[in-house]
Image (tube, rainbow, N blue to C red; front, side, top):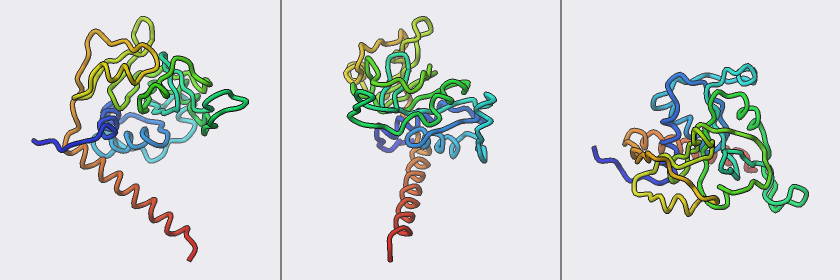
Length: 214
């Protein structure tokens, strides 16, 4: 089968979706984590009609998906401010349910684009202590070292180099002894993901039209 061309964002979303096993109960934020979970639901994972707060509080959530503005080498997250807290350069949406997800979900997965500005040596503010099982980026996958708990590169996308991943990290990124080259998206995965994006955009456009004055 000839696999169509795909973007790094699509590769990241597909890789994140593949982390979810069938039947897993997920608690998901907006943005890339939401797209990954919807893709998993439409391709291989069983849906759940609605997740209520008591699922999380009673530790019934198998997987929590998070994103953030900053992450450090141990998987701590910042979604509060960029810069000094009292006089921030940027004030972000804040914690939301991230601390509860990080502390109560059995497994935490983080999905975010990798750059020296987002993968930092020191957070401007620690919103949550995530301790993720994996961090899925637009370069590959990072997982905590079993001994040090420091995130290290364990998987790379096709045609992505270790040097490129390291250049997009604000700390000296270590590489696992066994580095996996991750499989590219399959045609079916891309078809479903692109249809999902198209339907989402159409729904947003319709919502804007409804709100515009006549």
